[in-house]
Length: 171
Image (cartoon, rainbow, N blue to C red; front, side, top):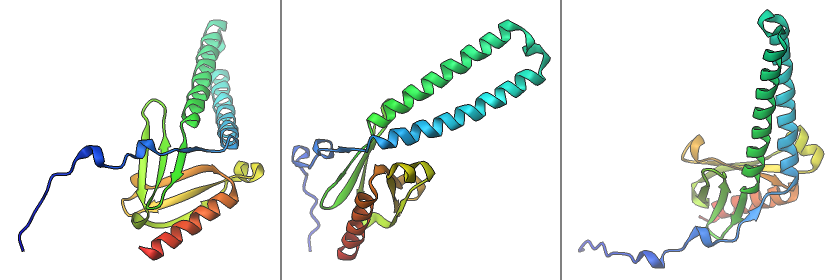
């Protein structure tokens, strides 16, 4: 048998970027805000304790500078989180799952069903209270290639998990 390796016209390849992506639920942003508020409260208390224990921070100028830096970092963190949230979206296709994330550096992950080892539905404390969950997809490529799709209703997440299980059994 003679080996052949014909050239493929790149313009005929399917384009994942043309797929209509579904944005994650708005309640996921609320979870992100809750997590950040908790983080910033802990950070603020630690900063406050450090300022009280350190005598050099007893001047109004140092206190003002510290609070200004703290407020700026807090604002930027919330803003970047919002921009990142707005770019989270997913799509379910016949042979794969797409997941987009990032705003400064956008990433589009394409995960074929035959590369998925297993998947699970998970919900943290804030997510359970808001009635959402996340679908965790574990692939053969290791941690870097795993996908977590947040902001799904439990019904959506379980339906997607069942679809993945069915597709894996077929392939």
